[in-house]
Length: 331
Image 1 (cartoon, rainbow, N blue to C red):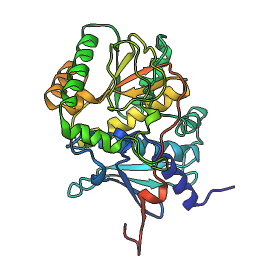
Image 2 (cartoon, rainbow, N blue to C red; image 1 turned 180 degrees about the horizontal axis):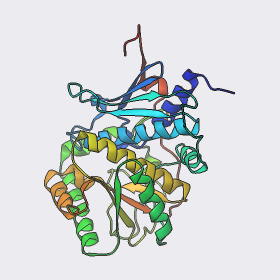
Image 3 (tube, one colour; image 1 turned 90 degrees about the vertical axis):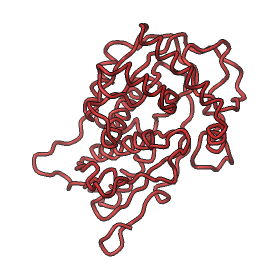
């Protein structure tokens, strides 16, 4: 049975809202007109202290864009994407045109594409402990290939001088942020809240307190999960997402590559969380940038490994983040 254009669009947007975002802010809005979806940055949901230049917000929007394209492929459709099409409208990050069902020469979705689409609803940020189990070379190759398909690259960082530098920079950034009262207030705003809240980070998503001092410091949320303290992995795999250049356009590309890699990781039984603190302190971000200068421009760091199952975080509904065209013009 051929799905209607409306149902295809709705399914694509339902996938989009499952993308990760800093503090689960969900900084996206979609304007829909027929077979056209406009992806916009929602400035009201950009973190004023942690992300004043909206770098992380654009990564999140790139992840949402990736979900749209993957879901469309699983429906045997194609999303034709025009990135940042209007220089006078920089918050219009992408326009997706949904091509007809079987455009000339187009193949049906592959099993691997359908697996990625299946992973969209299962993928979640895992701030809980990982196992001390190495990520295999074949798994790394799969993740790297996924990122390349979106125009980004992954750099895997194992025990090395660069690893030690990153560990130190993460700690320094966490300490610096901890002394910023405006940042602490921002964290508190997005943490917890009523059980029917559809954004922010629920308490049970924070992860337990570590038994020992962690080598790689996860973000402090200034409230603790009621679970008993647990031992965290000794040396998680660090993964940098890099692109060939630096601009808002590359932020979106990096976010798409990051998300396809995260979906591939989920399909392989891997877990991931973000190590964004160094990117939220300007001088420390410069040091991270220099550490990857030979690889490209670094956008974010991931912690990847084999984790214990945790639940997904809430999302706003498609209706809450979508405007429908009126008289042929975007709302």
